[in-house]
Amino acid sequence: MASRLPWLFAVVATFAGGCTRAPPAPADTPTLPEAAASDLPDDARRQLVEQIARELQAHYVFPEVGARMAASVRQRDAGGGYDDIHTAADFARVITDQMRDVSHDRHAMLERTPPPEQATAAEAEWSRTMARNQATSGFGTTERLPGNVARVVMTSFEPGPQVPAVVTQRMSEIADADALIVDLRDNSGGDPATVAFVASYLFEPPKVHLNDMYWRDDGSTDAFFTTPDVPGRRYGGAKPVFVLTSKHTFSAAEEFAYDLQALHRARIVGEPTAGGAHPVARTKLSPLLTLRVPTGRAINPVTKSDWEGTGVTPDVPVDADASLRVAEELARQAIATAPARLKP
Image 1 (tube, one colour):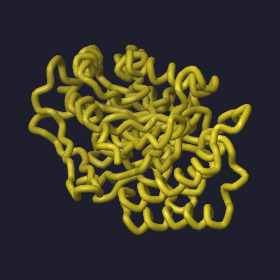
Image 2 (cartoon, one colour):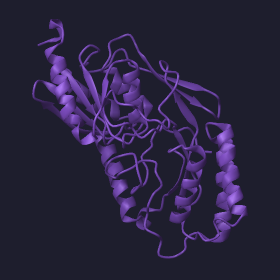
Image 3 (cartoon, one colour):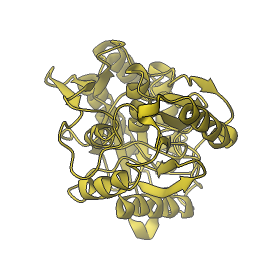
Image 4 (cartoon, one colour):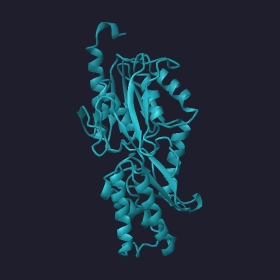
């Protein structure tokens, strides 16, 4: 089984509903063009079925659900249910649907991962999107709106040694704003450590307990806290924060919204999020196929629960396209009614 990886949940596009808004979804079944010819021989497919079943049974975060998924794919194979499938793209689609039918877990996925020279147009575009996220450390626009309201767009919570410096720069730029809007409508997820570091700029010392992550394989739990002494300038823990969400906001982006909502640090404006709280481990099964098995689950220290299957419920429900306008209005109202010590 693959080792524990950063919480990275963006996957191949185009999909049928939910991660980023362009491409339109995160961990949903890929709707990829069919291969021109068979690239999945029968004997290879049968071996893959057994590999998938073993991985699910051994590592899925809830053992009883993993066992049911494993039994489901084995039974379908024994009954000839995959005999008419001869391409990796179709096999990935069918297996992903079947795992989710049993688990209702949108992170469970068999992903078609061809080499670059064999990638479809959708796969190539998604690779470019991922590359852009990495190049910008997940940050999009940072702007100052009328009334000294800052808006920070994040399209992912990237991992990596270069990320803290970028977070420090971007968050320091908005430290003197009187209200903050964090736009996660196009955010596909990322690393919980980056979630915690970004959130650190929105609290005061001492450290604040944001989230826990339980891992099935070794029974351990990782705790995530804010950083008390952040580099650069801190926005602080008193001024208003609004987080924009859409039905495509996914995974670690949902954690950011959920954590701040549970701690009453931000108001969530927009649509209910996609509902994925289980981090995954990736196992390369063949040159064309990678299995994503959810091996852990989030446990919020305040709610003792998570957003799996339900998403984050907005405090201010509104269509995603209207959420920025609504949040701006709320931000200016909050500034106008802030205690004198918080006003410029």
